[in-house]
Length: 333
Ligand SMILES: Nc1ncnc2c1ncn2[C@@H]1O[C@H](COP(=O)(O)OP(=O)(O)OP(=O)(O)O)[C@@H](O)[C@H]1O
Ligand SMILES: O=C(CO)[C@H](O)[C@H](O)COP(=O)(O)O
Image (cartoon, rainbow, N blue to C red; front, side, top):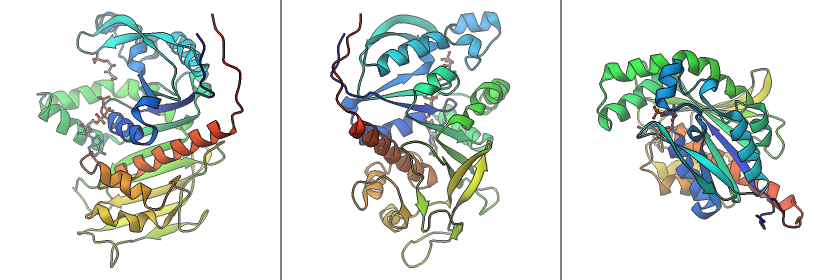
């Protein structure tokens, strides 16, 4: 087929199941538009179905249960502007369904357990994020969802997290090293036994087409307590941090928010102290948060950083597409 797409931009969203990938993708849709963004769930590249995994004694997180050759070939084809016939993993039956045709699009997002696992797939990505949820928080979120919506017991939830843990540590978590940004979600340091969150945005330095966002003064180290006249906060307030660090031996800069925002309208105060956010007009970040105040995490650092990472993805997209000189339409067999 031929396509008039000048440049297909490929984004990777990595993380365990139940770590907020769908919420993040809904926020991305606001920025790219549903029509121009196609999401591919990498569960569709499971090579073993549920029964096959049971027989082989492997989990879906194990590379042996996934077809990375096909993943690479198909993602590469999409990036080159060609349509693919992608397999479908059916979560209801646990079986592999007949394939579906996927056309290339301006933005292709590959999301799931392994977008950064295979070196060949990784090399195709234009920007990537890893959603890094600490065990304590993962348990909290899974309990909320799986007990309330899926009828699982507390013990089921803990058992399923524990059963996945060895493969998660072996195959999923190490992908953090390769992400351009990591959104790390940890329990608060402001109070003991609280469900408040401390959220860190770990931004890799030196990545092409990506300049990390910063607070006040680029490259310095800042501790900021923004609560006061311009930001109302309930006890124990909010603590923000910005500074340089190293992560898997890479130079990074970290932005951090610990605590919860009481009045989302006042987010403009925080936004006006952040720079290189990728916004296209003053207050855009606050507007995007306010648009979906009902999404989980909108009143803490998870929502704020998901929006910020989305804006940086859009900025990367703009940079890549504005520098592309128009190529003749591709012809493939
Ligand atoms: N920022 C957040 N704050 C609080 N809870 C959250 C947050 N993000 C997600 N959750 C909780 O985790 C659940 C799973 O979120 P989401 O569906 O976005 O994750 P997912 O990674 O797409 O999951 P899956 O792959 O299992 O579909 C939500 O229903 C919600 O209960
Ligand atoms: O980690 C997962 C990603 O969503 C799933 O557990 C994996 O895809 C297997 O799915 P299922 O449990 O429905 O067979």
